[in-house]
Length: 474
Image 1 (cartoon, one colour):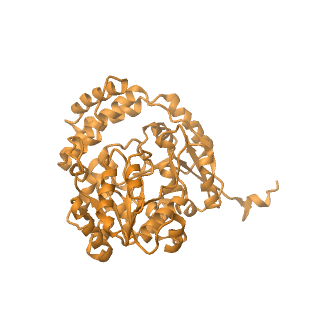
Image 2 (tube, rainbow, N blue to C red):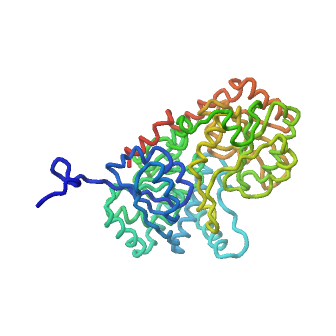
Image 3 (tube, rainbow, N blue to C red):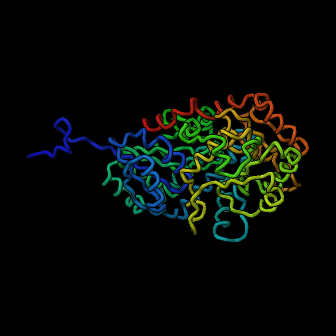
């Protein structure tokens, strides 16, 4: 029998491996699909398959960017059975209470949503809380109820995904983050077929929140701090399953292709190239409900220097509120808003939001051309550190609110990674803003002197090896 030349290599059929990327929402597109990861997977040898509830059109830019063809399958995220949900929520609450004792940090309980009203969800939360209190007394009980949670997924749900996996025969499945509980049937189906599941811990604050909602064979972590957190919070997971790989989101800052000149950036966004730019990076409404007041305070403090300084305001990509409008109007001579470049489909909720590829260059050039960044506890501190720029954290309450305070924000567990380090500059009051900003401009090396050491604790160095390491694992 003749073998077609196109299918033969040295007399045998070339095997094309398949890797399934499970992309449950838009947050993983930027970090894992726009980065070098797909290039590192060598498209001649590896077929990328994407499973996602997002429409196929979302991934057209990924194909164009990497010059590859993606096999796409739309999936519907299955609702958790009631008992599965109850047991999972109960173990989440139990883990939070367990971690409070483990880390001597009561702020961890702020990650538990307080039940309000009399809806079915609120009723379940109350039951889960009572059950979680019982589980907290013995860590083995937590593990047993997590096992029960998995067992209550229906066999039909597991078989649904098992059939797809049997047809594709992938080498591995990569879940782009660990927080979506509806993906558990994929994990259970893959386990029955001995197909390796890998998931990434998406953000530096995720593990203390006790939301490890999928069961994987390998867990990708950012750095030494997160690796130790996995061991502390999930001692049942063998250390060899925890893979220290960094995160691709920081690689973009070292890619010259994204950078344009200061003059080009100024022209594109109607900035004054002769002034020093300071970036004010907005937070989401829940984290910083008084963010507009912070922006107003910064503007008032820097108004006397408007002939020298321009504030670039970048709002949180998922914040579409009008809370900043009055400040932007009143200080339009000083503040220049540059909105994130994100797709925001109608009627999808936050799960459908995702960054356009052009937003990467936007962020890279902000860090490249701004002297410093101001925000409330954002990861942007690390983004700016890569290009050796200081971050100034807002550290005072603009109003008195019994339900919110910056003291609570900075008591969160992931900020303990700063212990013993001069990691950021601190804006401890409205009155200190001008002096601290001027210091960051004129003497940047004297502000946040340990910023690189902090990042080394949090993110594997060098940052540009992450995609390569992940590709090898997949």
